[in-house]
Image 1 (tube, one colour):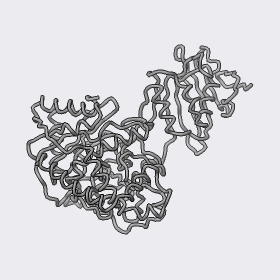
Image 2 (cartoon, one colour):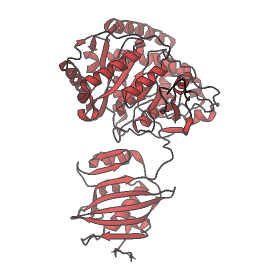
Image 3 (cartoon, helix red, strand yellow):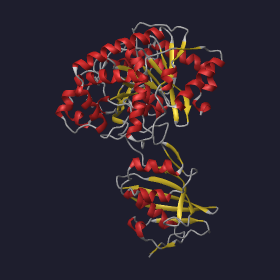
Image 4 (cartoon, one colour):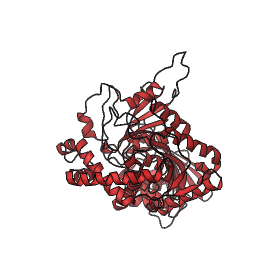
Length: 555
């Protein structure tokens, strides 16, 4: 029996799991309704959190689609969504409840707790509890809002961060304001920055990496335009994934869809930008590593014309396909970043044709294909452009050809390190390298011949037109999705992204589509050298169709 003589006058028996959590130092009750057992339920919930007891936590939340849980990363709606989040997150560790305030709300009660984690700081949890005779403790949570202790740095997103890490150039009085002055950059952990190391998303690689003596030109061009490098952001191991999962540092959060994968391999920069922590994400795109995270998190993203931006000082994956690009929250910022990054490059203008490939759409999920078709209908209805159907090689053929040619290059780039460090990689990345090691010279030669044929067919069909397609095969899959589901979506997406990869064309992702599963990027593929023209075209479409292209209006 524990008696608390606080101002609220709570007298409650505390037993079972709740007894493993220290009784709050202060309890206050505002209301005269019956709340027997509620303090015990709150403390039992705290114990289940600490122990990561998923079954108990699932029972604490009310069943149904109306149950809510919110925190700084967004809102989870429904018991199933909350339970899925719990399963992927892990426990919160040791913490004590310092204060508990109960406030009557009709037949229900609000419980506000101030908690103190053993790691320091304090957090606040507000929960709406309702009586439930079938619940283990007689109460269940209908809604919860969590304010966690402030973090100096989220290691899932950032590996190194500064204030800033590297300051940008300052304009002289004669120059006026530099175009990116005041903007901050999250740099993918593949780029050299003087005084820092390249980690390629792997703790084992980072431990042996030398300190860089020079900054990669792709980073320097943004610094020269006045932007500050805020920090080095995370990536999938060796950038060999489009999912964004990283066992060494944790998976960056998807700022647009709670409980969904963030998209990779430029996952850290994408999350940093989507969370509002940086203005520009500097990344690379080999097979969709800018296009996919931009699509999943509702960002603008540009894969540049192959070779248009220097890859000096950038850790390679597959040089035949590797490109540099940027992600931003709006088109004007992307245009400014691309202008700075592409300075001195020749420019190609776009033709008038707006193209759609039905075969490519067929490889996407129904929701993704329908979202593109609906957008094209609005485009035509507004008189902005007519569309024309074109035939392209089958995406399954593009995927198989890409898989072999990329794998051969990845093994040449990184195979020696992988061989010397068995067990250092995540299972999915390790499996890709195992396949890469098995590709023979004859298989690569045959695939390169097929690639040449595919590229010629794509170039002949597209010409100087703009191809419109989904940036990924679906909206962001759940973190709890089965590996087979993720692999199927990966293969479908890579078959689509290979259209630009095989031809070296630029591909722009714009955050205009919505599906029941979350945002989906619309991808515009133009002729080589049309990078800036693609962004300008998208900005004109956005200005013309304004409201229909607003993410909020389309949701």
